[in-house]
Length: 80
Image (cartoon, rainbow, N blue to C red; front, side):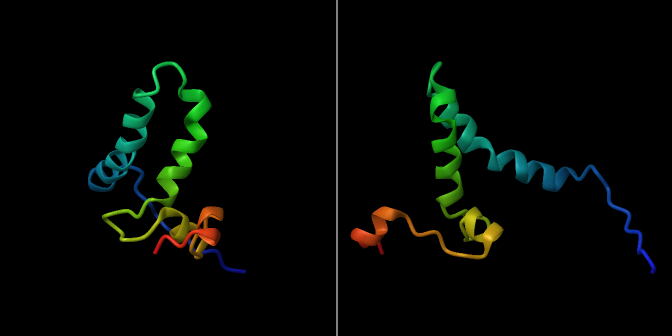
């Protein structure tokens, strides 16, 4: 059994900047909650998962699970 070792750098300024910018909408939404952020945190994260990313042109949900997300509302009312 042969294990292949791969060296990975922990710090990459270009990628780290992209990741930090991707958290901006979450930070902005949480800052508008003014004390009630913990109640709405899961809804904000869910909204972030179902919005199409301009950089990748895909929803983060699709990139993780490989499936399109269908909301219950879309079953009754067609959105596209």
